[in-house]
Image (cartoon, rainbow, N blue to C red; front, top):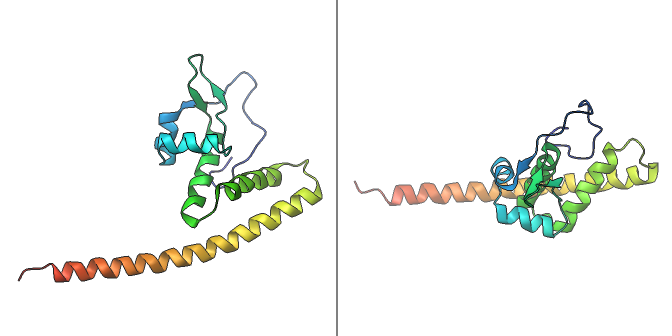
Length: 146
């Protein structure tokens, strides 16, 4: 699975090999979000750890991390938790060779709509960053003592 296209995939691993499992702290570091945020996303139904350790600790796989990175990328673009959840479902449908044509069409429509919104949000964020940099530069010149 690629980082940018999360979803359920058939594993090419031999049956006797298990995916590497990571605890929540490792996943927080890899995804650059807090443990608290990961727990919130779990409570919201966005992601479920693949397993639990015998001690009850959440265990995540690389596929889980890819899904979490998708969520993290959507967050600054203003997508809601429900939209993030729908994106994950849509990507799963697009990765599923057994999905119906109707399900595929709905998934494609949702992804296309989100892409258009992401393009618009990125443009807005670039403008905001330019304003912030202008202000930073203004402060730098005003703060000099010659």
